[in-house]
Each structure stands twice: as structure tokens, then as C-alpha cells.
Image (cartoon, rainbow, N blue to C red; front, top):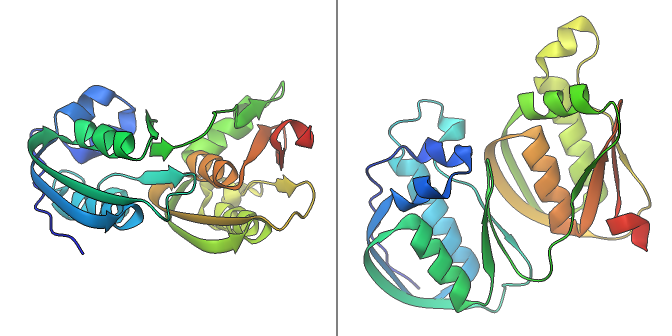
Amino acid sequence: MFAAVLCLCLSSLSSLRSGDLEALEQIVVPSVEFAETPMKDGIEFLVQRSRELDAAEEDPNRKGINVVLLGDFKDEQLTLRLAGVPLGQVLHVVAELVDAKVEVGPEVVVISRGSSYEAVKRKEGSEPLEARLRRIVIPSIEFQDTPLKDALEFLQQRSSELDKEREKGVGGVNIVLKGRQPVQVSLRLQGVSLYAALEMTVRNAGYQMEIREHMVFVDLVDGGH
């Protein structure tokens, strides 16, 4: 369905984790050609190639970039030919073609539709738990039409397995989901913090999370009101 030639240069792809849009502008894409390419396939191709070409990052789980699509893009196709364009501009053009917007975060680039909302809230005394969420790194995540409950249970289990504080008897993170609405999550990430993984999971489901002193509480946006 599509052909593309991609060569990223002048900057380590790992620098994208700084959330600095200038880093995206330093990564030049000599040639990209999409011909009626499904949106999802085009993005997956760019992500995969970025990981293959990231020679600066030694950890294979942290190579390249993460891109998350939020919204319904299943019927969107890309027809596009560009040469010598920075990766940041490529992503912006792709988003513009499908009437979406680009958000460059510390660990994930989000292409989304619809109105934005506050996906992460914090209670007083939540700072130590948030620090743990940012410290725990999940090597890989792949949810495909996964019930939100199951996705959160997976993240809680992985937090226990990967938290270095576990040796002190306090490892892992408590995650509480209010309600059991039949909402599903489709998401693929690599080498991101538990914080980013949770944020992308709840946003994918249209939920929000509140970081408390001893747990992460997940609920409908503003409690469903």
C-alpha cells in the first residue's frame, strides 16, 4: 500500500524524550511517499523506522519515538510525497491532512482529534508516588481492543515486577478503577515511564487519573459529570 524512504539524521532520536519540538525539527526526512496509506500504517511505519535508525540509543527498548493516535482514524488514508523535510513538520502535515493536532510530550508524540481535557490530576502529598511513576520504565506495551480494567491490571503487575523499591517491601503502584464500563484500549508504546503509560492509557479510553498519596485513582472525566 505504501512506499517510503526515511533517513533520520543530525540528532539522536532519544532527544525526543525531552519534549522539545526543536529536536523534531533537527531530524530530517529525505523522502516520504504515502499512496492511500491507512493512517495507522503510516504512523507505525515511521515509528518502526525511527527505532531501526536510532544508532545513538544503546537500550533497544528506548530506541526511536513513540506516537499515539487519540481519536477515530480508522477510515483515514494518507497520500503524501515529501523530500528533505524535518520529522516534526512531517507529523504536522500528516495531522493537518486528517484535521488533527500534534502534541509533543516528554516521552510521547500525540496526534489527536477533539477537545483536550486535564487527564492527570494530583492530590496533596502525591509527589513521592508521582516520582515513582516516572522512575519505573515499562519496556513494551501493546494493547489491542483490551478492556481498560485488564490494561490497568497489566500495568499494576508490571509496576510490581519492575520497581526497584520492591526489595524494600514497598514495590509497585496501587491502581484503582472506578466503575466497570465496557471501554477498550488500543495502544502500543516502547520504553516509556509508568507515568506516561498510564496517562496514554486513560486518555485512550477517555478517562482521567488522579495521583494520590498511596494510589492512582482512575475515573471518568470529572467523575462522569
